[in-house]
Image 1 (cartoon, helix red, strand yellow):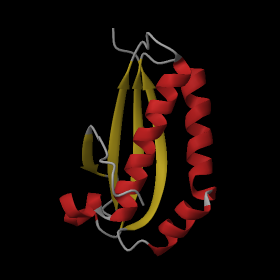
Image 2 (tube, one colour):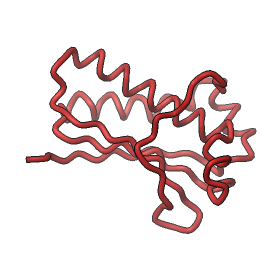
Image 3 (cartoon, rainbow, N blue to C red):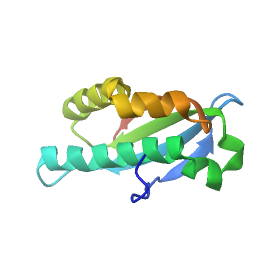
Image 4 (tube, rainbow, N blue to C red):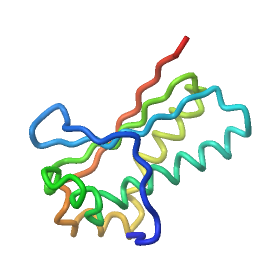
Length: 124
């Protein structure tokens, strides 16, 4: 949907089933600056992943992922859990309510659905 941006994904892996691939974003804290600013940055990364999956950038780099379900996974370490969880829930439930994204998901030949997962942990 956005030809200008390049998704910065920490790693791509086969999913839990043969019909699934994961795009994993890693965010490590603690965040020293404004949480809202950090969440906007994460939101941009998530949109870039959605765009890369829908537009075929993921399938171009990983041909085996074409036509599979894509899981966009956010792994959080030492982040404000409540703030990030609320943000992630809103994003994951709202992105495909946007008409352009809803249409792109329906028409994309590169994915068989996109879903989202978030994980929280601490690094000591």
